[in-house]
Length: 337
Ligand code: FE
Image (cartoon, rainbow, N blue to C red):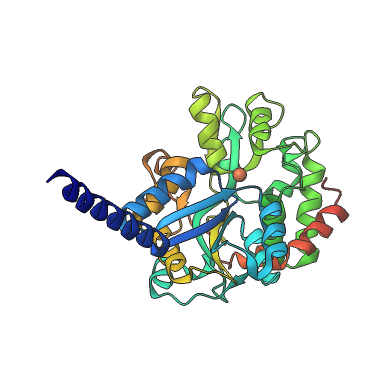
């Protein structure tokens, strides 16, 4: 009896479709606004979705645009999570009231205190070390010691720096204010300016290219830029030096994330945030962008490990946000453009 059979099939098919539809509506998802590029975050989200069944939707843009969008959308925002680089940006998002505090034993256990917001509105997920890169033909590692030492007259005409407009340098100077106070920090920055071989450069890579070309001897960069440059030009005469190892340690910053104040999928978003602090995602930060895992239980990737281990400065990275405005003014007074 072909007809009733077909009828039954149809009922079954329609029933399945309705079920799938219902499932789709109720399926868990997280919506992410990310200032980090798709190439880095998508592999992490794919693993998360595979492990948990929770879908991740995301948009990427620069942090300024994303913060403006979150502010404009207010409680109607579809975003559950903000991902961005630099504690200064995360601090700003929290100050604008765009994030909410999150209590999570997993995050508390995985992310060291100095790499997360004391109010728990954001958590560092990867560590970026701002360190020295020098020309091995012109500098012996024994001559190098600390950020402060680069202000000494022996470095006159030998230093290259990236522009003070970049938040990375603002955070570094903010940390120096926290450590030394404004007066001494200003003296140090003035010393750097006096030692510059050339006007401040547009980015970290350009600064290293100047060092490699012999136009200056040493510069300050985030170590992943060193990794990228070396991958492209393996014969370049550059090496990394970890400063301040006999004092407070290397200046570190983070990339990180927080849950938005008006998250509609908060519990799924917390699961994603926790996932990002665990081994699979932590390894990807290292593999894809040569950053250091924020979770100290995870080893950095092989290329990065070869640069040697170092002591990190454990001043809370939130300080970079708190003192950012003071740092900008200080650099201006010191003539650091
Ligand atoms: Fe960068």
